[in-house]
Every structure is written in C-alpha cells, then in structure tokens.
Image (cartoon, rainbow, N blue to C red):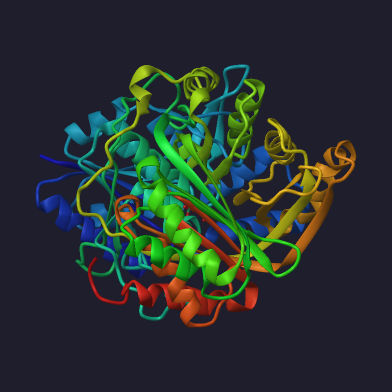
Length: 588
Ligand code: ASP
Ligand code: MG
C-alpha cells in the first residue's frame, strides 16, 4: 500500500459543494488502496477576512493573538472535510497542527518546522482512517514548556504538506490547486505559456517569481533537500500536472526539518579563463553578435556579466575554460576591430561556488562568503549570484586556500565538496521556463577601491539591513586611479533602506559616488540543460535584439541567464524570449 500526502488549497475547499467534490476525489483515491494524509488550507479567503477583522481592532496586534486567530481558519475546513468524508462512508479524522505534532520554532507568524512527530498519524492510518490535517499551523514549546499555536506564514499549507510527506516517507506529496501545474511563463503575461510535465526543484527556485505564484518556496526547499517527490496538479481534472524532481537525498537529521544548513554544497572548477571587453557600444545586438560568434566557434561560455557605464559604452565579461581561451580571444578581437573597445583576458582562474536552497532570501549568506574570502586576502575577479548559488572567480593559486576557508565558514564536510565535477549530461532542456521580475532598481557605486573586501563590505552592509541583491556586477574598466564600479539590482521597495545602509561605506571611500539608474525589470531564462548547451545566452540576446530591446545588464549563473531591461520593455522581452526558445510548443 502506498502512502500519499495530498494538499487542497483554499479555493478547492472554498464552499460546501467544493468540499464535497474534494471528498469524492479523496474517496476514489482511498478506494484504489492508498493510505492518505490530507492537508487543507482555510476556506476561500478566510485568512484574509480574519486578518481584516484583526486590523479593525488593532493596527499592530500581538503576533501570538494573530496566530490564535488565523489558525482557526484551517480548523473549520478540516472538520468539514472530515464530515464530508464520513458522509461518503470513508473513515476520516481531523487533526490540528498540534494534535499531529508539527513542532515549530517559537517565532509567531513565520515559524519554521523543526520536527513532525508521526506516531499519532501512523496509528490512525493503521486503523484504516484518512487523516485530515490543518495546514499552515504548528505548535511550539515556549520557554516555560507550554505549548503555543504558531503559524508558518501566508501560503504555508504547502510547506505543512511536504513536511508531513518527508517525515512519513510518503510516496509523493500532491498539491491540488486551481491551476493545472507549473507553466513555462506567467500566463497573464504570456498567453501561450505551456504546462511543464516536470521541472527540477533547482529550476523552480531559480524561477522564483514564477514558482512562488504556484507553490510556497519553503515547500520547494524541503522537497529539494530531502528528495521527496512533489506534484502540482489541478483539483478539478485528472491531468497529471507537474512533477518537481530533486537529485539530493539528505537524511532527516537532528538539525530541524526546515532549519538544516542553508548551504549544502561547495564546488571548485579549475582551469577557467576570464575575458573582459570594455568600451564596446551600448546598443541592441552587440551582446547577441559577440556570443553568436563565440558559439559558432564552438565555445561554451559559463558566466556572463555586463553593466552599462557612463557614456554610451558597455563592459562585458565572461568565463570559459582555459583550453578555449586562445580561440575566444581571437573571436573577440574580430568584434573589437569592427566595433571598437578593449580586450583584457586572464587565464589560470578558478570558479568557486556555494549552493543550497537556503541561500534564497537570506542575504547574509553571500555576504559571509565574500567576507570569508576577503579575510583570506583573496580578490574576487567576478561575482555571479542566483537564487540557489553564489559563485566567484578567483586566481587559481588561491583555490586551495579559498576552499579551506569557505568550507570552514559554512561547516561543510567532504561529501558536500566537489572539485571539477563532471557536468550532468542527461537530456535536460536548455530553457524550461522564463520569468519577469518587475519592481527592480539598479544602483551603481562608482569608483570604489579595487582590493579584497570591497564587494564584501558592500554586501554585508546591505545584508545587515536585510536587503537581498538580485545581481551584482563589478566593472571591467578602471578609473584613472585604479578604482572600479560595482552595480547591483535590488527590489524597488528596498531603495531607501539601501542608500542609508551604504552611506557609511561611501564616506570611507572618498572618491566613490552612488548613482541610481532608471526603473528596470529583469527577464530570466532558466534551464537545467543550460550548462552543457553551447549558445543559450547568445540566443537569448538575439531574441531581445530582434525586437530592438537594449540590455542594460546581464548576469548569468549556471542554469539561469538574466537580462535587465527598461521597465517598459519587460513584457515584450519576456514574450520574445519565450517564443525564441519555442516554449509555446506543448511538452518540453
Ligand atoms: N490559509 C493560509 C493562507 O491563506 C495558508 C495557506 O493557504 O496555505 O495564507
Ligand atoms: Mg495557498
């Protein structure tokens, strides 16, 4: 007999009729001989309505009381669903988070799950009952040892479901919702977006804004870490939906189910070369031309970074393997001869990357990495950040030293460290999906000292203020006195806070100056096959050039290529990339 955890969202249990429909669906699954644990959200907009009630009484209600209030929503839906099941002759019992034993930290309003005690559920399952569990809530043991009700944060029932599936070692966790699964793009922006039959958890995390609309990101994080099969599918049809996959299979440890190490991988790739072109024209099509020539020459480019500068010129920096350096240099010189610009290349470089689902939304992690390297006196030639990975390129002579320092800082053990790993060659799409992140702003800090610790200082100041950088780029060109520019993008809402946070640094760097760029948006293409496919980035740049869109900034990581464009170009850029990679064709 197989055990499944099935979660039904608020819309799926939004009315008596829908609850009865869901009950029928569960009854069918039970008839097929499955053991079932059902997780439900509050009915319809209940949680919003409860929050509104609280706001009428207090603009700042105690978090503990908010949890007491919001947790009632799910208690209604579990009881009703359980009744509906019993009505159909299916033995079912409802349980709150604390009855089940979902133990969380004591932080009200956004508690993380520490442990799921499974005895009580297992007993009920052994008796042949369907167990209906309230999502979004748990119980903490407060300092005095008294149990308190906690909630996991809005949208948290997905996280309850996957945590239960992990603890119970279920066959799969199925999230039933009002969309058919994960699509190649947001269908409100790209009408011909298609359903994906599967996607890796890493890709889903990299498509943050697209993914978060479908699943609570913390749920994806758990599925990724413990390798639990997670399926998103429609509550109203029998279509299979989208399966999320993960290679990793971390054992359930003593660290707390959701609190495990945010960084769980460290990778060193040696024999890399960095090629920098500066002072090339800032106009649509230049990046496309450059990377098309490289890909026609058979060169697989890894990281690409570009930022706009004063005047009408750009710097573009990329990495490739040492073996391809000479050919790449030749191809770049051809371009420069035609368009103007300068070339500077450097071999004997090493790329160091940390990875982990927990990097997402925790700005302190990149800061710790940069800080660790700067303390070891290591200068960062290039930085590339993504949702689940932070990479930097350093002098290869310092590789071993960097590896030691970083593995110590993140307490990583030998199995988590890989040196020159073989790329995965299974057939994965070069682009699975595209996403648009609007509401972004670009900042540049001009003329900062070019020495170890500069990027680290900048990142730490921002991280301390709780600000996540979306992309960070160091300029290729140098000012007369040797200073460089550092540009980064961040959420628009963080702009004010960011200027305050870095003011003390600007005061320490007398020649530096903070410059705020125009409103921007970021288009990202994500694909697990990207690292082993030649020319993906060039195709993305070509897609934008064909519709005349200028790229203000490029920041790639292994499985993601992101281009920053003007805000008004966002939707057309997204559509252009979606159709260039033929994502409108069914099934990838
Ligand atoms: N009912 C909660 C909310 O609306 C939890 C959930 O739906 O996942 O945020
Ligand atoms: Mg939800």
